Image (cartoon, rainbow, N blue to C red; front, side, top):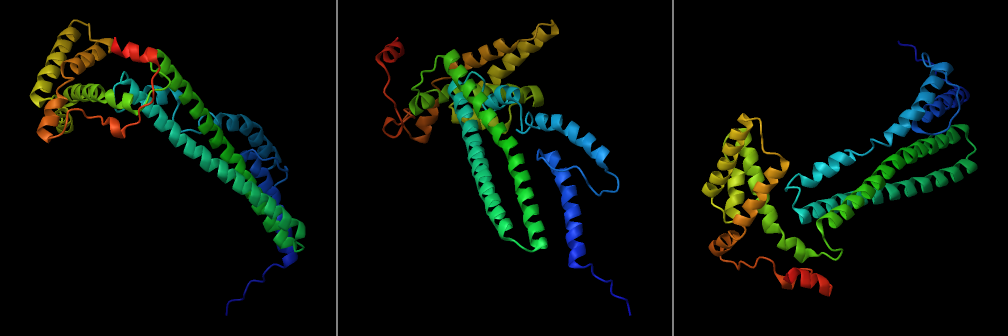
Length: 309
């Protein structure tokens, strides 16, 4: 018969919990929480712990720089022009606002999480004041420390979200200023710019298809048809542009960024009315934007005059 191992007494357990709590307190310093320095570990002694804690101070500062999933540069130059060309201004504004909305949700969630955990800490502290049993007190202290660490870590992500909203708002104002977009732009302005944005987006994708696969992809062909542009027209335009580009590259003179966008602008101007053909085949009015069911804000007189000219 196997001899059952004798269980430690409550007094021994309490002592072990207190020692473990000291270790835990030191480890919390790695999560930006001030704690004691003594720890009963086999490898990590006081000297090693102090070494880690001292250098973690800088590391924790750097964590704030990378708590978000991407950089400001990536967000502005990649995300904001991912689906449509960079000069599709209202699309860029739409994308900025969508990013801000997502970050607002993160800010709200983290704010309520912090408030909730702080209230829970206060509740645990009151229970701790009334607790008489050492084991129960140790558990309460451990739970308080755990929540304090959680709150501390959440603050870095909260600040990261706030910073991202800040620089996105700056980008929003810069786009409006540099592109001449009025503060009171509305849903109707956005909808009116959609045809041009879609034509540019389709031709941009077509060029990418040609460069990678040597032909326009099925999805891009469908995009052109939705805009009333024949895939054959698209192939002609894109293949001509790519052929001219290849000739120039053989002479070490490839088309630059501006020339690429000049081509997209020419295509938008040339095929800007083709969507009416698609509307006719579908059986709908070519006046795609319904003024009855679209938000239209009042414009100042000077803006109306500018639109007439």
